[in-house]
Length: 420
Image (tube, rainbow, N blue to C red):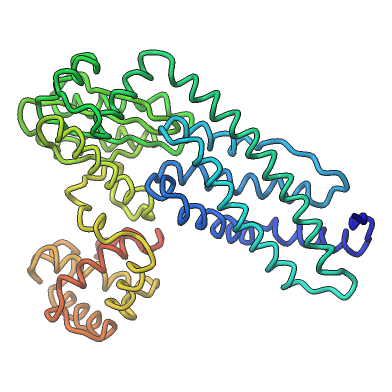
């Protein structure tokens, strides 16, 4: 094969490409494309928001390191630290080795599509398209091969580590209960150190985006248990920045008491997702499933002010609607011009939400600290922007507003501020 790198024009073209794609906006577009492909094609990743976050960080670090090396005459490789977390967290979450291959296969497909389009969109009379593609393909293939090899080794080492110790055995039992392969509550309780599975079970999923706070996750579980006036929770660490916990109680606990934990959780940069309380081993499974669904909303949403604690009961409807493209189309079709991002329209949406949640113009006015005629005016204006009356489809509008607030609204226009 001829040495395409000896071509000065190609070197200059690559240098310009690296400079352009290293910009923050360009890098973010690339990460969104590759990360989106992986999430769409790998089932385990699509269902696990925590793993999605790890992979997004790895995608960005991979790309920046690859670009930095792309313009060098000799390729060198080291697996970036963020990418080392991917196989480790995958192993900790109990996924098979094939997930690693699926992640990198999907990523490689997206990268090759991106590179092919990038070369064609940057035509140059001095650079042959085939030469540019050969250079990219050679470098990217080598990069992916080394990444997979080292990731497999890390995955296998982590699997071996997990097999050791009491924590690993407890996690294995929990997975067996959640997976339905361990159904005897007495046996499961004994293998879980006496955790009373016949009692009510309240599952809590704890997550932090700050590596320095991972060590505080068990304390967070204890703080929330204490807030309910109960004793030691069952906790397992599935890996990464997550902790799973179950709180047992003789009766159904008052989960509103967990609100007092909000300040502590915020100070420690920890998010909690809480499932409904249900009795027995079936409740152990169902509450965890609900907490996982609530966590998807809290992590996939844009952080529009729901606080550090997300209750499944509060977001159950959103978990059914989902956060995909179908939801986006539904929101824009239902709200019309009321889905605009400016502050005035945000105020109209907040007024609609206040009216829908209270059912009263007077109550909505008091909640927003405005005159009731102001509420009426805003409702009329909102109806004009939507092209429909609120009374014609209140349920659809309410759902669309909830989806908008959770998934689509920018933080800048998140909450209606009291006036006056």
